[in-house]
Amino acid sequence: MLEKMEAKGQRLLKGKQKGHKRAVQGNIGDGGSKKQRLDGGTVSYFRRVSDRLKEGFTDEEDRGVFVENVLAEVRGKALLVATDMTGSLVLEGLLALASPAQVAEVLEELGGETGSEFTAVACDQCGGHVMESAVKQARRWTEEESDVTGAEEEHCGMLEAQVQRVSAVVRENLLAFAQDPYGSHLLRTLMQVLSGCLTRDTPSAQKAKKDRRCEVELVDFEIPTSFWWELKHLADRLMENINVFVSNLTACAALQTLLTVCHRKRPKLCNKLNKSIMGYLTSLSSAPGVSPLLVFMKDPSGSHLLQKIFKISQKALLRDVYRNHLRSHLMPLALHPIANFPIQSLIAASTPFKLFLKIFDELMEGFEAILAAGNIAVVVQMVESCVQWEERQGELLQRLLQAFHCSEPASLQVSCLPLFLSFLTYEVYYNTEPAEGDSVTQASPQAFSVCYHGSRLVQALAGFKERSVLMNSLHDLCPRDLLTFATDPFGSHALQVMVTLASDKGRGKILRKMEDMYVDLACSMYGSRLLEAVWNSAPISQRKRIADKLVPSESQLRPDRFARHIWAKFGLTSFLKRQGDWMEVQTGESKKRKMFRDILE
Image (tube, rainbow, N blue to C red; front, side, top):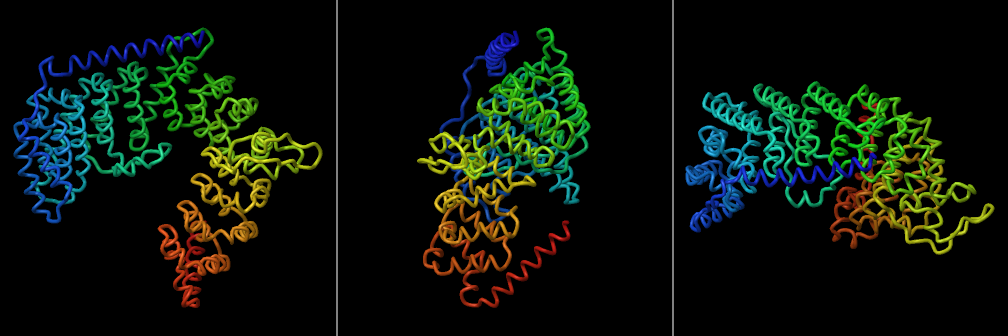
């Protein structure tokens, strides 16, 4: 029955989204009339302006004159420019350089006399970006407010009034904005601005390289008091239409943004929203004896929302959700391809509380089944959370050894590290069956490899109080596998944690085994980062041994794009020519680190 409800709900949801998208495109557009465009001469002008903006300005006065002249050309046709592909890009760049008063003038023209034009511009593919850029300039409130001149204070007031005007229009047409693919981005940006925090801008090249698993970084800024009230009114309006924001994918993303910024800036409002949302979700009808939350946990949109709610919920709400809705249902949810994600968030959120022990015990009943289902992130999260619960560490490590088939005989445990890192069982990794008795048969093992979740698992296990099994397995690695481990994008992070958390004796044993590969590490993108981390945690005696191994390869290290930074940071030129001075510098740095460590402790 539950599966039928899910399938039916997803079909209805897709149908509603398609129907709404057609309605929005028909109602918010230009009424069926042909869209006006800029003439060829104007487009060419804006292309030249774009080229000039890319060159940048060295003089503030020149920049101000340039911005004023271009905005003079925009005046009277801002709507056309904002919805043109070339013109919108130029206008975005200009708004970032314009004064608050100039930004306010552009917004005033885009909105028209009543502000009704904001909807058409914001829901346009190009215009939406211009609106976002304009609203974001409100973060300069603090910068301009530091100047006490009355004119500049008035300019800030003009921009504040226009942002409030945009907020009023968005609030009035909230569902149209929330469900539109372009308008929803303005809604999310507006929520951030009204709360006083914005996503940090990064160059597009960095965005491409940034790991998607990383949390979005927010930057705080001061805002006028009126923005607090605007955010409250917007949140109240949203809760009046919570049914749409829970069921629609685009609108649900905006709701999650609101929860994020409120958790950061308005904790009381965030708690109120959390309780209201959970109250709505749990009030919906479902099959007899089945909590509605179980359906939402398996829904693509609902699962994302519940992930966010779990992450920012307080102890009382988490306890209530577990007791009244999820108890005895964690295993089926952990095995589900979608529901396992909110389960991960629930485990992480409950870690500081005794509630975690109940969740842990329930999930341990089907530990190997979770691994067999491929939902290894659930297991990794359990291990990471167990770092704070010493009384469960031994049991969990033993279950891991059993799951990877390297628990018995005890001699097999020395092979656990490559199994954990690759998330492969003993039989698969070594292409053999565990031998009878105490001998270990390792015929034709697979090439040493590290996966993302394997690296996370080992990093967490390295934080356990008893980690001798893991460290013994590390010492058993052959030099070739150890070098692969150290230069792997994921493995280097795991090895860094293992080395830095090891005892002085254990660290020394690892470094002695790595002595012949220091040069290879220094010339590797990931190995050089590992070598630098090892250097920072090493005592002077170990630093000297590292330097002794690197200096003879000066001709290889100094031209290398990675190793040259190692050469400079380790002060190897000084070590080579003035070893006494080098020792004084290293001794001073060691004393400083010890002093700061004592202060922190």
